[in-house]
Length: 416
Ligand SMILES: Cc1cc2nc3c(=O)[nH]c(=O)nc-3n(C[C@H](O)[C@H](O)[C@H](O)COP(=O)(O)OP(=O)(O)OC[C@H]3O[C@@H](n4cnc5c(N)ncnc54)[C@H](O)[C@@H]3O)c2cc1C
Image (tube, rainbow, N blue to C red; front, side, top):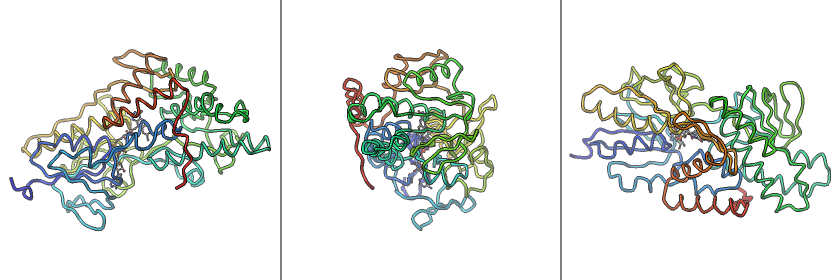
């Protein structure tokens, strides 16, 4: 078939959802244009490892062009889509309009600072490679600054690390940072009294990792406390000015570091879409993952809002994004054949979060467990899910090295 006459599918976003849709259409009689802001796919679940100097950015990201080298019906374009016109079926990219027959919006989410301008200015976040590297630079710089600071109060503030948000990212970052201090920085800074260092995890709710079952929440709390993380539940951050955190009860924590992991909202391009929105600005979609008024338009992954059969919103997780990407590809094929698209059912593969060395919590096939076995599963699953054989080997080597030698190798302070 003449390639020009083929139906044109535009996919916005080469994250988990966009990648799966593109793969699912590999042998379909369509022409695909995959558009992404950056030239790489990013494995966001390991961003915190970049921030705590455990992995290099290149080990958790992979060029999109390499991933799709062999897929002949796909062309990649790097750039940011600035406009989506659902009525006239085109998107605007780098100043040009590109027409489509089917559109898959998979632009993910961004950090939600809930209108706290000061927090956005002074806080650190983990959303992309730039913010993760900036966090690493800042954390490592604090140890350098503390090592030359004679004033005990100022030194204490430099060695106080506050993480806001007791979800999986906050928990993983707090556990890994506490271990970086006890196992690695202690050796790098023998003259610095690292007993002064504090890692404080603030959570406004009554529980950590609220979506997990009770036994795993309790295990997480215990494991973090064993690693000397100060967990403060029912504690709301009120303000942060780069020097001190003010809490809801008026008390103050002097610190130059605040990592914000407490909020997400749909990507900017979603704001402009004339569609009904659910929580966090996400687009409310049909069970078939498309829009009622524009059935050729699919919204999937973190940018989409869909409730499961019990009325609970599906979580913003890579597993949901992957399954929706696969389902969207199938439904586009069905629509092209003049058939009805199928409703999406999320198959929950279980829950997993790591709290550091030998410590993780998991719920798989309805069974909850924590500690070493959960951690081994976490390690192997994350190595398996990392894209690219070379990256898998390097990540495995890095983690084995860190494990046996108590040494995070990527302790580099780089300047932009
Ligand atoms: C720090 C962190 C830790 C996490 N840990 C876990 C975990 O342990 N387990 C888990 O299952 N999930 C985890 N998640 C969530 C998981 O990463 C997301 O659910 C998943 O990435 C969503 O996939 P997506 O394809 O919808 O979006 P993304 O993976 O975010 O991809 C969206 C892509 O679209 C691009 N884009 C956005 N706007 C535009 C535009 N206008 N034009 C062109 N391109 C655009 C972005 O640059 C990005 O590449 C974590 C997320 C973060 C941030």
